[in-house]
Amino acid sequence: MRVLVTGGAGFIGSHFVKRLAGAGAEVVVLDKLTYAGNPANLEGVDAELVVGDIADVTAVERAAAGCDAIVNFAAETHVDRSILTPQEFVHTDVLGTMTLLEWARAHDVRYVQVSTDEVYGDLEPGRRAAEDDPLRPSSPYSAAKAGGDLQVLAYVRTYGVRASITRGANTYGANQYPEKLIPLFVTNALDGEPLPVYGDGKQVREWLHAEDHCAAVELVLHEGRPGEVYNVGGEDFENLEVTNRILELTGADPGLVRHVEDRAGHDRRYAVDDTKLRELGWVPSHSFGETGLPSTVDWYRDHRAWWEPIKSGSYRAYYDAQYGERLKA
Ligand code: NAD
Ligand code: TYD
Image (cartoon, rainbow, N blue to C red; front, side, top):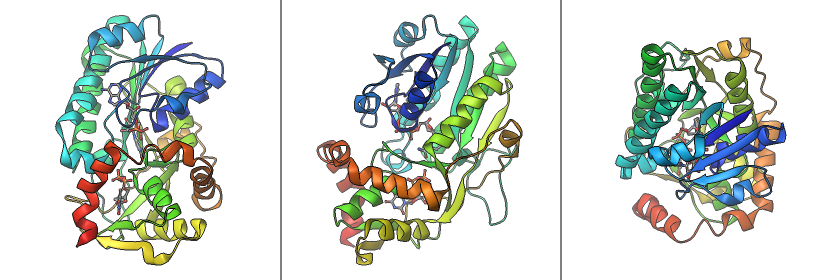
C-alpha cells in the first residue's frame, strides 16, 4: 500500500509515519514544514518527504500520485495561536482539507481525516459526546477543524468519496512541539521556568498517548466505514492534576506554578464516548499515570537537543506575545 500522510513531519503525523513505514507500507509525506513541522521527527525513517501546502493543488498532485490512500494530519493545531492569528487556520484546516478531498474524489482513493474532540465544544460534567452530537466549536481552531469535518461529510454524501473521520482527545508523547500543555510544562519545569496555568486550572481534558492515537487512525484507515466518524478517547484529568504530576516527575519546585489570566473562550471540559472505535477492536496500550506521562517526561529529559533549538527564535516571539503580560501581572 502506498499512503500519503500529510502533516507527517509534525507531532502525531510523525508517529504515524513511523508506524506505517515500520509495517512495510510505502509512505509519502506532504508537509509545509511550518513552525511545527520538523524533519528531525522523521530522521532514519523510510518515507519520501515532499515539502508543500495541502491547499496547493500542484503540491498535492506531486505528492499524491500513485497513492492508494490519504491520511490527513496536516493542520494548524494550537488554540492559543488561533486566537492570535485565525486566518491560517481556515486556509489549512478547511481549504487544505477540501483540496485533498478533491484529489481523493478525482482518483477514488481512501481518505481519513484526523480531527479532534474539540469540535463538540465543552461538555457539562457527566456528559460524553457521541459521534452524532452537534458540533459546537468554541475557538477559531476548533471551528476550522469542524469546517474540515463538514467538508469531508459533504464529499462522502455528494461525490461518494470513501472517507472516514477520527476525533481524537488531547494527545501527548515524544516529539510534541513545546507549546501545548504537557511539553511546555515539562520543558519549563526542567529549565526552572514558570508553569503558566490558565485560570483556576480545573479544566478537564482526556489524555491520549500518540501511539494509541495512531493505532486508532490506522484501524480506521483499514476497517472504518466510509461516511463514519470515530471518537478516540483518553483518560481524564484536571489541568492542575497534570501539572502536579509533572512537578513530581521532574522534581521541579512547586513554586514554579503560576495562575495566569485565562484563555479567551476557554472550554471547561472535553469528553468523548469511544464505544464505536472499541467495537472495531481498538484497545489503548498506555496508562497515563503508569507509563504514558513518565516515559514522556523521560523523553524530554533525554532529548534536550531536540527541543532546546526550538525554544529560541520565533518561538520566543510567540512565547512573549502569549505569556509576557500574563506572567508580569
Ligand atoms: P502539529 O502542529 O504538531 O503538526 C502539524 C503538521 O502539519 C506540521 O508538520 C506542519 O508543518 C504541517 N502543516 C501545517 N499546515 C500545513 C499545510 N498547509 N500544508 C501541509 N502541511 C502543513 O500537529 P499535531 O498535534 O501532530 O496534530 C496532527 C493532527 O491531529 C491535526 O489535524 C490535529 O487537529 C489533530 N489532533 C491533534 C490533537 C493534539 O492533541 N495534538 C488531538 C486531536 C487531534
Ligand atoms: P492545550 O495543550 O493547548 O490543548 P487544548 O487547548 O487543545 O485542549 O491545553 C490543554 C489545557 O491546558 C487547556 O485547558 C488549556 C491549558 N493550558 C494552560 O493552563 N496553560 C498553558 O500554558 C497551556 C498551553 C494550556
